[in-house]
Length: 253
Ligand SMILES: [Fe+2]
Image (cartoon, rainbow, N blue to C red):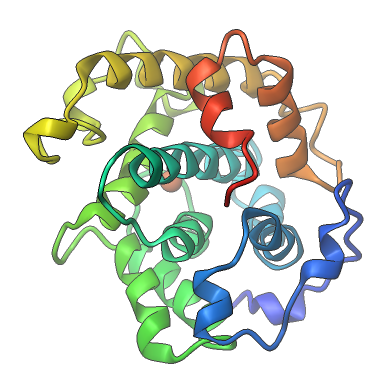
């Protein structure tokens, strides 16, 4: 692996002091019960620096950079928490988080993703430092489109699907978005959980978040807590983002 996350150890100052929550001796139990704050500490310290490298090399416009990853994480987290709180389904919280975080890490260029397997391997290599390799592979498996599509993989890729709306992708924002491409609460779910109103509302909010935060790209490029900036944006825009706020702002996970 070219960019070994272990070689990137940046001094990390987190507003919510999550630095103290970093754990290097996780076992499967602590991994599977890892809180959002604990995950964010790993994201900031070890994973986002990979994307900073991309932004400094082939991805100067940050098409697949930190903004894309952090928003995708917000989307996947909202979907995960929705399923956990509102249905009987049990998505694998930590596996989804790390899969989304690493899903573009292996890229060596923009455009069609021919590096999915590399991204998956990055995810596996990283998690294998903390948990058994077989379990790490469960997370890496979510990144590649091949294989069985269960709920976890649907959430992982739905987060990326919503991000297709970002203007730098050139698909025409929300007007060019194919709503059927989003699996969340649609035909892939059992009938009792399908909900067109929530789906449509989520798409509208995702577009608002994408459109407005794209404008922040230049100004937050050098902040230490990139994800923190986006989460603060969500908090400030609770009225425009009621669904996303509702599921992001509770401290249950
Ligand atoms: Fe992506």
